[in-house]
Length: 426
Image 1 (cartoon, rainbow, N blue to C red):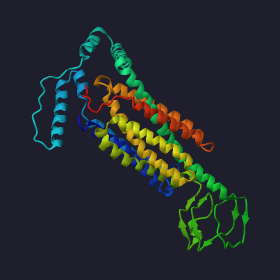
Image 2: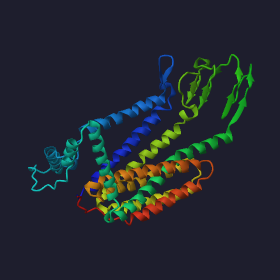
Image 3: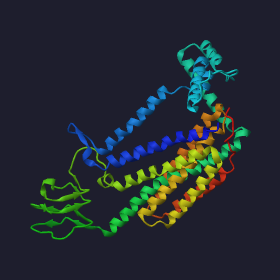
Image 4: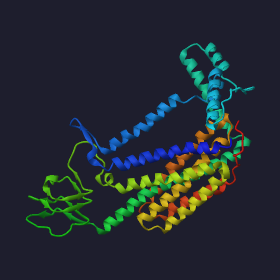
């Protein structure tokens, strides 16, 4: 019990590792258009498809882990599988003693409170119904009634107030976190677009013949132009996309290419080349995922020392201050810095919230309560993503104010939750 919060926090850290894996592979794979390959003449595997294939590996690893993960002892007892439940409990006991570095002890239990099983009910169903479809219907209707009864039990007087507080905190934290998660990269892209538009020159349907360029071409777009016998010699070409042109790399003699891409007409599904080659956005996503690491480590080490409530409330209030200071950010670098700081401070609230959500409910209601809270989290994320994305290019005051208000509200409500650091789970 003295290390329960810390161990749960270490487990939550694997969520961050998954985000690091996704953002790092996206940064390393998607911008490289030339990494694609063709299958036949019609279907082409581009870099973003390779990224999706790479993301398949953690999903397969998770599937393997689920297959070998032991079942819940409580579920086994409810299913009248007592021997299997005993084996799982003994495995947990032996693992814990090995981790402590002390001599192993024989696992003994004088009394195990067995939950009410459903075996008798299912035997009655099988004997009273005739066809397989009737048995299937009765069994699943009974299971549905049990689920609904379990959901309704969460509104019992002993869970009602703490459940309401948890719903508010989960919603506020998810609304601000996922809303700003959409707002940060979109805002950086918009700032890049504004900077580019202020400098770019567009040339439409121009024709160039027998002309010698002895000056630099910077921030220019040449659309539907024509050129004859064009060659480049001793040039340095930076950050350029040759899209749908007849300029091949052989026409560049003694030239130095920096972040230059040649895109020719191809069949198949392509991403927009402006988005595909926007390496900065993928780098920003990776930095945001990496910034979570210090907050994860600190929150795990102090979860059982200062308590869940202080970590949740303090983290959300500090994050709200970071959000408010976004109003003073007028450059891409400043937005990236505040993004990293926000992610680094808010992750402690996520860890504390998941720990306390597990500890507040008894075993019979823990899974149902946690599932409902995660559903509320997803709803808040969808709502925030829609709202925050709508204000890109219009104003940044409203998204920042909404995130700030949600974090302050959630942080203050979190301070009203009961502390579960010394609670014995039932």
